[in-house]
Length: 97
Image 1 (tube, rainbow, N blue to C red):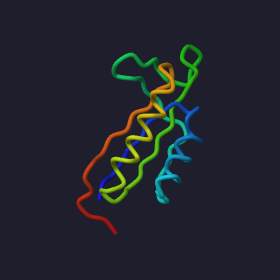
Image 2: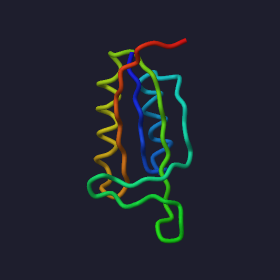
Image 3: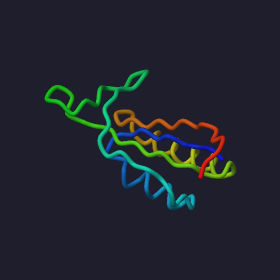
């Protein structure tokens, strides 16, 4: 099993949920307001007067075979805008209940 952490501009939320549904991913945990900035060219998302936008994030655990299609769909969404950020990271899950 793998964990996928997705950090994204809040404007992508509905599209991310659509991608999860399309890939038959039911379980996830979502954080509505997270702060950060991109490591390359991303503008800060701090939720303050100077940088008012915010990010959201989702953490999901999926079977290994779902990882590649899900990442491909997220990459396509990310390519639709250079101004809005979207990143996804995959971790191994060792155990769980």
